[in-house]
Structures are given as C-alpha cells and as structure tokens.
Length: 391
Ligand code: CMC
View 1 (cartoon, protein in one colour):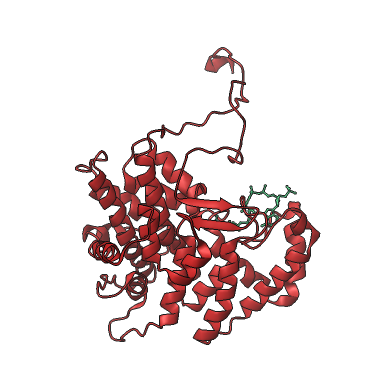
View 2 (cartoon, helix red, strand yellow):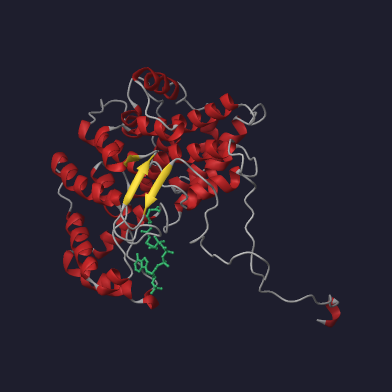
C-alpha cells in the first residue's frame, strides 16, 4: 500500500539522470559519452577512456599528458597498508581483500576531506583510479606469498599493473605487447555500464554523503556476486567442469532445468536483449589473442560449442539470452596468466573509472537526493507484547 510502485530488481525505475553512458539494449548499442564502444575499443586506451568518463570529453594531448602524469604520481600506497594486508588469511579471496583494502582507504583520506571542494573530489577520483591496480596486485601477491612490488612509474597504466602483479626479482619480466594491449582493451570494455548493481550501490552510498573510498568499497562488494562481476570467474569454473565439447549438451539441459539451480554463466543480461556489443568484441579478440600468444586452450572449444548450442536452443532464444561480456573474458585472462580468482578483481580495476565518474556526477547533481527505496510490508498487523512466561 502507499503511492509508490513495487519494482523488485528496479527493472522499470530510473533512480538518477546521467550523461555518462548510454545503452540501447534492443539494438545492442553502448556509448561512453556518446562514443560507440567499438570505436573506443579500436582506437583508445583505458586511461583515455577513464578521462573521457570522468570529464565528458576526450582529452587533448596536453590534457591527457597531465592526467596520465597525475594518475602515475598517485599510484603508491601508504606503507601502513602492508600491515593491514598482512592481517588477511593467506587464502583469502582477492575480492574479499579488495573490499577491505578499499574500505581502509577511507581511513587514510577522511578527516581533512571536504566533499564540498571540487578539487578534493577530483583528487579522490584520481587517487582511486591510480591506486586500485597497486592494491589489486598487492592482494594477488600476498595471496601467493610473494613480496609486494612498488609501481614502476615509467610504465603505462596497464603494463605497470601487469608488472606489479607478475615481476619476480631475479628474472626480468618480458611483457608481451599483445598481453598488455589485450588487458587494456578488456579494461575499456568493462569501464562503465550505467546503473548496474555495483554503480547503483556506489551512488546509493554516495547519496548519503559518505566518504568516496567507502562508496567504491561498497561497489566492489556488489560487483563480487556471480550474477554481476563474479560471473567471469564462474564462467571459467563452469567451462572447466564441462571439460569437453561432448558434455555441452548436458550442461545446456541442466541450465534449462529450473530445479537444478544451475544457470549458464556468462549468458543473459538485464538490458541487452539482442546481443551484448562488448561480448561481440571480446569474442573476436579471444581468437586473435590466443593465436598471437600461441596459447591453445581446450576450454575455448568448450565455450564455442556451448555458445552454439545455447543460441540454437528455444529456451535461450525465447528468453533472449545471449553471451554477455563475461562469457569469453575469462579465457583471455587465463591466456594472460591471470589466475581465476583474480578475474573479478580485473573487472573492479576497470569499473573504478565508471564508479568514480558516477560519484563525481552525483555530487554536483542538483536533483540528487538520498536514495531511500520503499517497501511493500508483508508482516503482522499491530499486536501486543506477550510476557515471556506466557509464550
Ligand atoms: N541460464 C539459464 N537461464 C537463464 C539465464 C542463464 N544464464 N539467465 C536468465 N535465465 C532465465 C531465467 O531463469 C528466467 O527464466 P523464466 O522466465 O522462465 O523464469 C529468464 O531467463 C529471465 O531471467 P531473469 O533472472 O529474470 O533476468 P534478470 O534480468 O533478472 O537477470 C542476469 C539477468 C544477468 C542476472 C541473468 O541473466 C543471469 O543470472 N545470468 C548469469 C550470470 C551472468 O552471466 N552475469 C553477468 C551479467 S553481465 C556482466 C555484469 O553485469 O557484471
């Protein structure tokens, strides 16, 4: 009761106005600030896309250099983070560590943080984009017992991250340009996606005036679930379990059986009902990257057969379920030598650019209000307290 609409899952509710990202789910269109994702994927870099999302325009050469310089000079994390990191269990999931580490950033940047000051808000966004890869690499290295690496600021954003993650002291790291370029492209495709669950979470927390690092930590928590960013990890586990192309038929049958509780991971999307344009780009890229890196992954055959079988099946056709961004991304991460547990962390690094852009937009939106959904109450009507002795 009451004059509001029941909309579980917000399938028909716009909670804000935004000029950042446009999606046409029926036509398979995705634009960042008006630029088609296909053009950005082909011509841009992740850091340039981060600038675009944050500022609304592509940077000039000088603007980009200044942005790059600023991000590069905020990549270090405070040494006290080490103590914090070393408190996690050695086998903690890297996403659990990410939630904790990002939340702890709020304790480093809080007291003097004035959210009314545009420059301080901008700096918070820069710090987040700059430090998230450093934190992600540290979480990974801690999880495998390797010493943490400092960011090498003579490298560009994505290569610097790969370096921090993989470098071993006595062996100079040969990073293939194909690997860095592939990861950068995946970062571009994951950078923003309007009001998805994690971005809406960042905005909901942001609507209360909370510390921006805490807002992004909340976004990371929302991203972790297998229905959202955790799907990339779940896809790879699913493909490994299916194991061989011959087993694809039974996996499809199981996904159609509601009793099984099993869904085809990497399939379906709330908004895309025709195709996911990111999946189209990633699919093409998977074959190219594996070929260039000389990787022969039998799971790619499983993925191709699974996609083929599902796309022919009435159940998936009728429900307009297509491969989404996460269906092939894991195979590329695997080919780049990134372990499965780190897949969703990769997503978080990229999506940080989107989260901070939405947070910045919200902070100056004159129509923004505290997010406060209503509910349909289904509990008891008023009743009297009963003494313990009488219960
Ligand atoms: N496998 C089997 N059946 C499915 C699947 C799937 N992957 N996805 C949806 N369905 C069925 C669902 O059971 C329902 O059937 P029915 O109408 O008979 O009840 C129908 O399709 C509609 O599904 P829904 O759950 O109402 O749709 P939604 O918009 O609430 O959920 C989704 C979207 C992405 C959570 C869902 O498709 C899903 O769980 N997919 C698998 C997880 C996944 O790949 N997530 C990544 C999403 S893209 C990247 C990101 O956002 O992070």
